[in-house]
Image (cartoon, rainbow over all chains, first blue to last red; front, side, top):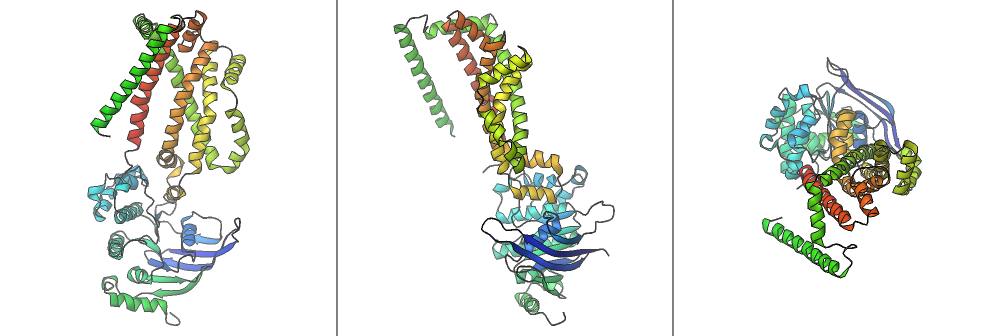
Length: 245
Length: 252
């Protein structure tokens, strides 16, 4: 199976005005198997979003390479991105926001209907984002990212600043949709419990400059990761990885 | 707005116009009727102009000129405004030009267009459009500078392409600026069109005003002015306002 290979040797932000230059990433290397769910775990400001932007192709000013294979029949890999804020266009309805990222042929396949149903938004398809609750706008962002049938799904702390029950429901929803529409996921978070709940493997990052501190594989099946005790056990495993793991 | 407050607003408006009319009537009693004819005299001229078709004809021609130069000024101004707002180097280079063109008096542009291109329709239209373009550019440049990067990044990741990004993200985001430019544009353009007609055309409201001026026909001047202002008001109320309302449906 083809792999996503990340090799960011150096990413620096030049000095601007009074602020001095910052090295955000140094020697961040890891590979991801196709279909794997990876959590990038690190404290706020450690360069997680910067890495995602580089992988997404939004930031090309870095040293290194990103090898991202495309699915068969696609000239270029397709990326889905769930940003920290939903970034929905306020002048387009829920349905129109999703349709915007699809070409007409894709839109006709019924994928919008399926995803609206899966995210529980079928009744809100004609609503404008400003009339939705915060949790609902996150669901629209999820639906939009899955709608393009991405080869790689990037998620940048998508459930941050939500109350815990809402965040937990959305995590469950994410896993549900992901199992129905498998794809490679890179999920950025600073929350160890969230990583413990979601990931196949957790990549723990060092503080800026970001590099790989540890890679922790989680063997516990996801259906067993609902109890707080289980999550806690996995969390300890992530925080204090066994030597050689 | 409730129906009652709308009605109250309309009542107030009618009262206010009535007061103006009364003031005019009283002033005309005191003044020389040739210099300030009474509202009734002007209404008579207005009715005659409508009956013999001359007033609708000249207003129609002027409106056509307003429409063409407005469309030209808006589309060219929007394009340049977005380009300057998005490209700081381009902006720095052309900023001086913009300040220069903003400060050229309308009269100079009109005279130069007529001298360079002759007393033809295209010169008249160009003169009006050239007068308005710098204003549109300045307004749209402000808007384009403030475009939300978050949306543009979203468009880039999801590979919307330039046309789709422009149509579905940039233009809707700039809509308030476009409306602002259109509003001030309409007000400015129809005034300039009249001057252009006065100086180099043989039809239109401006030409008529010029003729009345040479005959000291103040009633004619007032009749045409009132008719034209009314038409422009109707355009604002019947076209611009509903357009704005429709585009703002999504706002809470």
